[in-house]
Every structure is written in C-alpha cells, then in structure tokens.
Length: 346
Image 1 (spheres, rainbow, N blue to C red):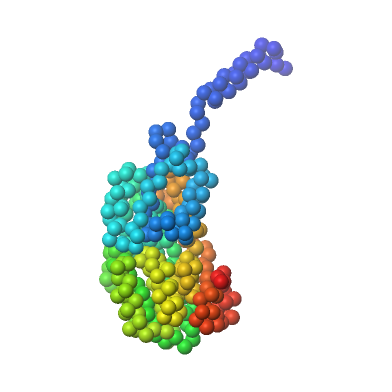
Image 2 (cartoon, helix red, strand yellow):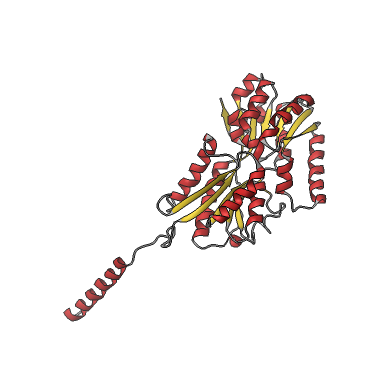
C-alpha cells in the first residue's frame, strides 16, 4: 500500500514529466525546425491545363494528408518544359541550384536529364517506362543510387494497344504511328543500339502479325506539329497511333482535333488523351501514380534512402473509350472491346 509520502513523490514525478513534455515542442515527421522542405517538380505540361492541375492536386492533397502544407512547412519549386524536351537540362539545373530536398520528375526523358544533373538529390519518378531497361535504376527491388518511384508499362503496352486497335477496326491495315525520336534518344541514351534494335524488331513483328503496316512519323517538339500532321496525311492511314511521349501528351488536344477534322480514329496511351478526343486509350492511371509519388516523397523526407525504396508498378490498367468520338466517326465499338472498358466517355 502507498503511503502519503510515496504517493506525493509519484505525483511530483508525474508533474515533472508532464512539464518536460509540454516544454518540448512536438515536431511531426513532416516538419523541420530549420526551414521548410523544398520539393522540386519537373514535368512537361503546366498547371494551367485542367488535367495537369487535377494530377497535381492529387499529389498535393496526398502530401497534406501526411502533414505537408504549402506555406507552412513545404515550398514547391515547379518547372515545366511546355512540350520542349530541350528545356529539361536548364530546368533540372535550376532545381538543383534551388537546393531542393527532393525532385519529382515525370517521364523518361526528364528523368534521364535529372539523373545526369544530380547524383545526390533524391529523385522520385513517375510515368517512367521500364526504368531498369532504360538504365535509370539497377533493379525494381533495389534501385540503388538516388532514384526511386513509380514505373509504368507504357512502352510494354504498345503491342496490346495495337491489338485493341485491330479488334476495334478489323479492316485497318495501315497505321501512322506518331513518336518522338528525340525523346527516345534522350530517354534511352545509355541503352546500347543492339538492345534498342531488338526491342523495335519485336514490336514490328508483333504489329505485322496483326496484319498492320506502320508509317513512322516523328513529332519531337510542338514546332514540328504542322510537318508531322502533313506526313500523317501523306501516309493515308486507316488509324493514328500515338506512341507514349511528353510531346504527344502536351499536344493531346491539337492531335485529337487534327484526327477529328480528318476523320482518322486516334488511339492513345492515357485517359487524358481520350478525354481530349482520342477514340480510346489504354494505360496506367496518372492520378494513382501521383498519389504514390507523394508517399515516396514523405518517406524520403522522413529519412529513407531512395536506393532502399523498391519501385512500384501499376496494379490497374484502364481502357477508356470516347463514345462521342466513336459516334462522330460512325464507328461501332465491338462488344468484345466495350465489355473491357473501365469507362465510357460521352
């Protein structure tokens, strides 16, 4: 049994402990006593675009849920190339000079530029295809170096997209494929020519097996748009296929309007391109990747090393069909394709 003296001593100890607890400011892992965290962001499309703003809002909201609030304990340093991959080196250098704590980077070409710019600042990538094959990281499970994040299947899905195209348009035999050659050269600069040639040969063989002949069209900058679209018309294609690239994404509205004006069915990698007017898209959900990127940023700012954070891959691939575009082109979506759609847009 406690005596009155021992009980008073216990109370005194409890009061001292409470005083010490209140005297020390409570810092959440998302706060720093020195200065706000600085988060760099390098992408192609500025936030004036509604879908780019939507993706950014998902990222920012995910950070808020983890305790990071702009103006209180975090500062964002955002840079956009406006569709020009040539601007990436200067923008990446700006972020490095701003002494950011982490850089979030979108797409292969930008990720490679950031990797060449800094080997010390942690980097979180998203919407990056085959980061191991592109030699951005050592492996998905153990990235090594200063880069981690979210990979996707953009280039790996090219054959699947052609299968959807052929299932939708069985009589299509000639397809114009619009790609960014400079994006590929930048994003795969460290991959040997034999590997690139082998990958292209496999893709070409898969397309030929579907009874499709490709007309390759280069679109490497917004300034190339008129020349590229003239080349598409010269090819007289049954359909237009957009290879994943920052330039094609930046020009998604212009490409959709061009295809509509000339009544060419347009197939694309991302739902935002279907929202812009493409007939259909098949690929990963960008919003999901932005939310996952926020989790990586949080873990890094709490002390985790990018080299130790395994790279995630999408768990869901979305088929989005634009019914309004289908009606305008008098295309009936086959039931075998429609039943697989995650969403039908009007």
